[in-house]
Image (tube, rainbow, N blue to C red; front, side):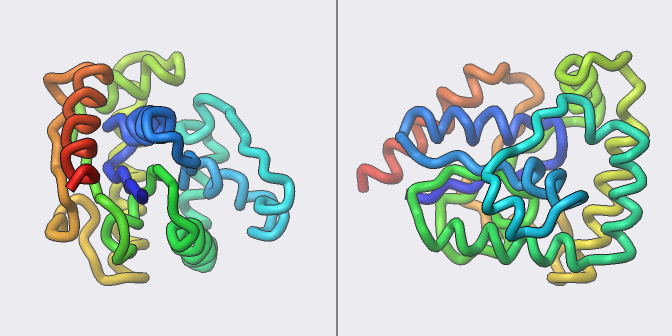
Length: 193
């Protein structure tokens, strides 16, 4: 069983992928956590140590902004991450959150989570203990640079080229329990067949 949850930051992809992993007894993998580790380590070191930094608000920090600009200039970081994620998918029995794997992997049940900029800002602000409204510009910048990187590397438009996805769900009017309930029902029915 392979489930890939994609979406922009603040849509609930990590939360949902973790819940799917728990429910179906799958390995959970967070692409953004691995990407964060790659800022200071090689893929071999990340794989070897098997530890993921849990800094809550790191993606909205100044250091993360500098890292984003570095990734924009040096796409090898994203390429290494995506190659590793494809290997993990090949092993199977995984629920992972990744912005790219829904478009790149030929395997798995793929979910795209949507949410408005306002809701994403509110969720990230609450999650990372920031002031509401403080994140919106950072989220937009991340979206633009990530989209540019993936378009350059792989030729797809992040959040627009959704034909590869099996389920597209707008999370604006749902809480995380409702999102999980809907997705679990779909997954149970899909994998029962």
